[in-house]
Image 1 (cartoon, helix red, strand yellow):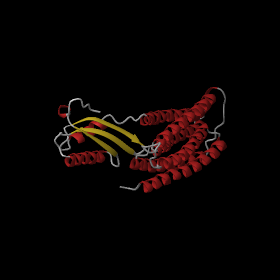
Image 2 (cartoon, one colour):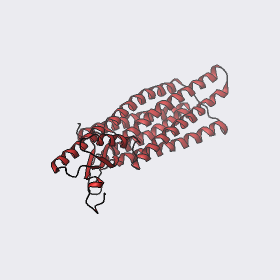
Image 3 (cartoon, rainbow, N blue to C red):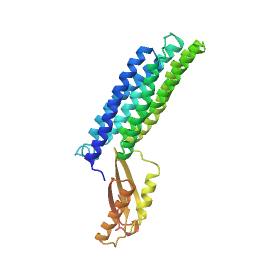
Image 4 (spheres, one colour):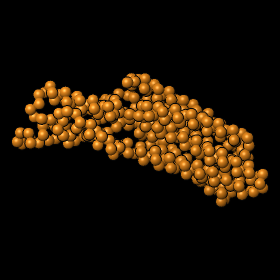
Length: 307
């Protein structure tokens, strides 16, 4: 198993690379957006600017979550990654508010000249290439290390891919408006910006919902069922009346109560408890498992109640 130090270094390296990419893309989009007057490109610049802020928060979250457990945080600092993901969701929603406001203004209240230059196409195509590479690298690291912060950052960059594609389509229609002498096609740029906002809202909803569930310690519906099946399959376990699980960052914590025969020796009971721990660690690698042993109800001394 990879050491925590190496995992933190890899996660930090991926996050810092994303910051560098976001800085470059944001600056390029702002320059070209101002040169061409394209709201689609400017909306992409705003999106990338918030991606930059989110990437910087991700770097902080990755480093903070790697701090070891202490007296005030017995389960570690992994929830910092969940808070980071929630913050990134709010940033995405703020982007949508600005984009929708500007797009509605251009569609119904004022006209802005849009120049669909070669540079506009170049920056968007280049942005798509960079975003595809970064989103794949971030998602791979997120899955490897069960990192919510890196997963949120990956969603940001993957959102950029779709929104940049929409903007590219909008710029293409602006060009067609000149060739086909259809001035109304110029409005396609603002419509493309609205489409970007819709995409971002949908991604924000998914990310926010998942993050809130993680902060509330929700777990996949079938995980406890799988865990109970594994525990009951361990020889010597008569029942597993309580299994509680929670995730903090990329680490799982499990509290399990098992019933063993009252006549079992301490050595045998300890061996069964170890087998239960091993079985659950196979289901959730790197997890922290605590096993509490009790005799079955009918074998308990009178007056003894289960916890």
